[in-house]
Image (cartoon, rainbow, N blue to C red):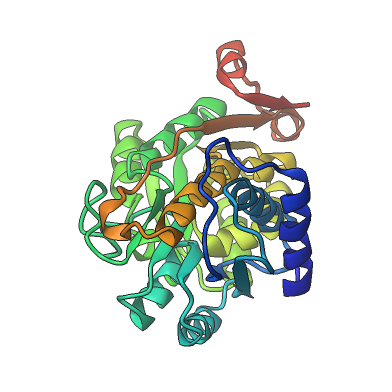
Length: 331
């Protein structure tokens, strides 16, 4: 979505979405910057932006009337993230909305004064974005993606659908993963060792690395992998899913879209809901509240999804109990 199209979305939203009951009309023009660790061609974050801007329209913020918006799409390129962070900060916006850990880090390096609201960040305390979840204490606050314990949960769910596992890799890109790949690793290691399965940290820096890791896991029986909640993997999920199918490797992903695209199983927070919830925080800061006083919010909706077609192709039988627990089953 290019900037002019984004403006049309917000303008159209203002015509169809009424102001929230009792909402105070914001006064004066405000300037919103948006930086995303996604490709502009990805329909998923496009949908999130639409949901977010509808939320802002409900709260009285309309581009062209009282809001100016500048958007930058950085994809996986950490150098581009820093370049765009520098550009946005130079524009001196009223607030910047950041989608992802690496872009939030890039923005923090450029400013400690402009308010920043992040969405889809896994470890805001460990990354140094906030002093604590309850009391951020600086110019940054936002919406936490997942706690470390989900690393063990991913392993347990994968082991339930693929009980023949002997070794499981957790794949991540150190340049874009939470804690450079360490954030989820301890809970994953503990869960794997408890089940007498060999845990394998698998760092990748390119699509070629990613394909090679999956191919190696499929070279012998008993291999599987966990895709870390990592923006590099998210942006390359189709390649990863295709490699898993080609090499007959069972895998679990943090994103529902992965199972819809042919992945075996997914478990993670509803990211669109997280982004939607960011609109009221942006509104409150634009009206004068201090991000230091707004607690970091935890995810409230999680989704477990299983793809039965993929399970059948891998020769796996999914238990009735697992199917009953799933939020969605793809046939």
